[in-house]
Image (cartoon, rainbow, N blue to C red; front, side):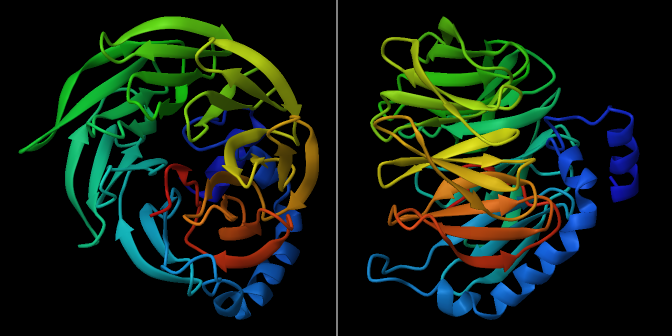
Length: 353
């Protein structure tokens, strides 16, 4: 879809918030994009130095960024601060998750109604699985490798099982309307689903593949993130501008955190939470113990996907509006590097390898 067409749809209030992102805020602020893009270019001159391995990170790490408007999966070497590969994927790629061995990437293609399977080392698409509706959010079972894909246009989650012949469809799970963010608990027993249009989270028992409980949260929850032990979940509530903090075993909400405008996804690092604020062009940092905001960090235009680096001390943010990645130090709460990437970086899901 061209930028002109997106702008026309935005002016008419007809943009598809889930499939192309809540990008109208980025378009409304496009006049202010030039200065930020220029700053990003300046920062890129020192990105290789700023993103060099710290004493806490011995290995190079790769960001696999779904570039929705470029129709590709962009691989970025985070230590070098450079693009290492571009893998063409049509259908406005949006959601991404990695296999348990981190050798394959699963990428949702909502406009092609399909799921792409990528061999990361070979750097090519090895298969495509047709999926009806609007495949968007995605998660992978950490033990079995089962793939779960949310149907944005429905009230269901598709289940795909790994086999010698690739992924095989093995059923659907009924959830709330417009499921988006998905997460599987570390023990593999539960799937949590953020139901954007139902203002709720579904708790699915994976042994029976049935919804056990449904919890009301903030307005239009989109991204859903689990703590490493699976006891807490965090939903970014797009319309109510807050994060719901959930006690997973108790199926109850235990707090709210106020954010910037249009929160998208939450990431956790160094005892803190970080949520991307799409329309504010910021990341809100908050304490995980007291659930109080700590700082507002300016990043690129229209930040969406966010994830924690392998060492646990940095956050990588995909800025949809100005085609950059921002790296944030989780302790100093400062942006340490900005790297230009391909058009429309979304990175909705598990995108760091």
